[in-house]
Image (tube, rainbow, N blue to C red; front, side):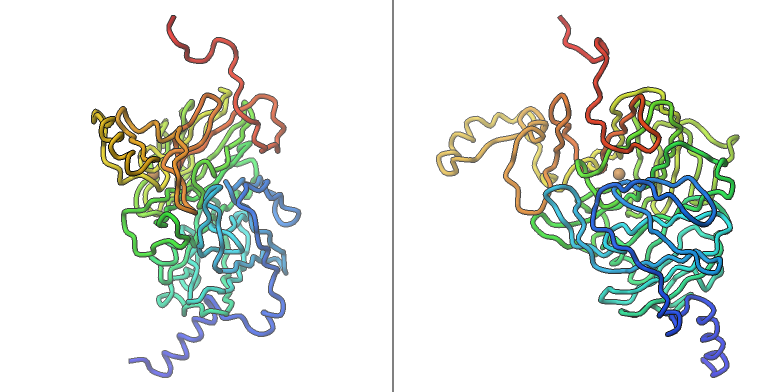
Length: 426
Ligand SMILES: [Cu+2]
């Protein structure tokens, strides 16, 4: 039974925890910048607060903040957004500050952070700060650690970033729906000493998945396993930007998985060491070499390598269905089936009918198939030698000589030195 004393104590705890903004605080809410673009934004270099080497969010951006009386203040707005998944397909998602995923939050070990969360969704929400060590009342589990944030209200979270590392944020309120709708973001806490764990290029992205019927815009929110859009930061190839790297750069790639399945992420051309999880930095003595790292559900893995071999290196999930677009997963296997006679007879009824798949399904990558509005083909993307036959969780790591330190512009396709490309036997 809840006594009046319990009620008062709980109210006091809530007031000390994620607290409803008072009128005085609301008058001084920090600005909430909104991002309209799904393109990778240049690293956000801090002009105040402790110095650090910023990350680059793949097809994303970092949330600016303000310093107020020694606190770093951020303002997230939970709201419906329209996200371009790849050219030719837009999704009606829920996210933060104009995009899904939300902006990356970057701060420094020891920072006192105050994060304002305004709820512009049609239902209540909260934010859980995944992996961050903080007071219980700031952990963001609706009903357990705080009241839900009703539509139209703003709550405040306050805590100190006790340790550096790579974390995530997402709702802990109507969780299945809100995560299926795209509500998530990255948190990077940089070491107090900027030379510690220092790299030249530091990329981050979230692994996510949607189930959006071809021709529609809103994800099915109750899907458990049969997703049809496999995305990195809510983008599918060829909508995922390349990771542009200078030859000789030390590189870190941090990936968080908020889907319902694991993703074995594979980089061509390099071996790498896993240096960080959302539990913290891996001591050098415990690191081991890999070329594929399985990112578990709800986990984060960061790996590092030195980019000493120039080229266009494929970088993708190794579950082959995760490098395919939404169209065509239901087609029957036709390999070895002689279809010519069948096609001729069907063509008398449907002149544009064509048979496919007799020798495999690669012809689907080259053919411009008619698609319903607002969806993506199964295999797509044009490379310098022809169709790349990929979709979903696939992009290219582009390592080039002579890039300026802050140059992240797509350098185009790699020009292979003479005699270094596989060739037809004479
Ligand atoms: Cu995968």
